[in-house]
Image (cartoon, rainbow, N blue to C red):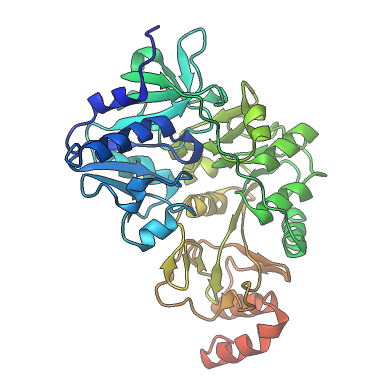
Length: 425
């Protein structure tokens, strides 16, 4: 096995116009990108037209602030709390797209991608694992050059995210820790929403959910269920709880039976330790995990996603606030469509009935500039702390009345008045 390089050796692989592919979140190789930024700082003309393509960055960097433009620029495929202000300031770009299609979108930008990724140490057979990530990165194995940053903190995971030492252009070591994302504690509203959702999930269902207070509450509310399966883009601490309880075992899944399947993991050190060499968990490329055609093959598939605003038609604006970009599409529509075609499938979209300022999140029409993530023809069930609105197959009048019934009581009269004015009642 070749001896490891140093992070700066990646510079030998970067030329004019190179497109750097970086995994999301903790898949980012921090020492390698430090070396890239150091080179840009030392020589402003070192890079020409180099682009860093990445979803959901969790490390702030000078190049995100535009310090090395135009030579070095970040292109995001999903905004995070780190990249959101940089997009607002115009120093990074944003490419809209479903998570399932991000690999193909990235691939279309370059014929010679360079993937720089964090990885676990190689095993005795010479295989690295991409650890907490498979996402779009795993699809580049055999289709692009790889330079890896190995850290002992990265768990060795299984699935379709291994790469042999003979397949990499170089690798280095660092002692960086993985960043922990502490789960948000659910409040009373989150718990009530979770109760409505959990009551409608049958034993043996295969579920998808995300991270945050409401998903955490839903996971906790499933502790009395049996034989659940997991097929989800995001593996979180809530999955650990249900697997340890024996609630999640995947025995009724049609695909990857007995395996918990995800495409990336984000959570605490406990999650990272649980993932390490755990053969019950597999990470697959997102173009497989999030493919609606794959999801639809599971029976009783349950998709659970959050939104920010819903109008009377059932359109869910999940990536903008007040007409300004907050995140992006992610996998919400992927799973909503997959659940729609699943035999017995259900698609839940959850939200608090009001904002922190007391404004209704159920509105007659979306605000100008708001972006529809889950369209009216796909939406199934909308859930607030006041109940569940069944929308699929219902008329506009039925949808409007169902949504007003789960709006906050303080807003129902005004919503009804506006519905009357729109001839929706």
